Image (cartoon, rainbow, N blue to C red; front, side, top):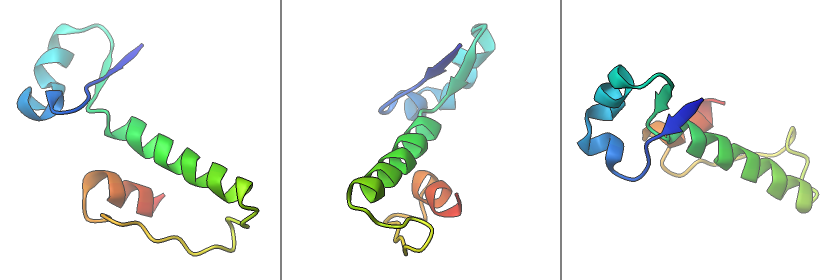
Length: 74
C-alpha cells in the first residue's frame, strides 16, 4: 500500500513526486519509517534496560535534521 524510497532515491528523484504522480499507492521518502523504527527501538531499549521511559530524559543527536527533529517532537 505504501512504498518508501530509501537511500538517495528520494534526494536525486525529486522527493518521490514523479513516482507518486505515476503510482496508485502512497509514496514516502523513507524518513517516516526511520522515525518509526528509531522510536520503537528506543522504547524497546528502555524496556530491556528497565528504564521508566515516562521519567527518563532523552537526547536526540541530530535534532535539527528532518528525522531527528521529528523524533524529538514525538
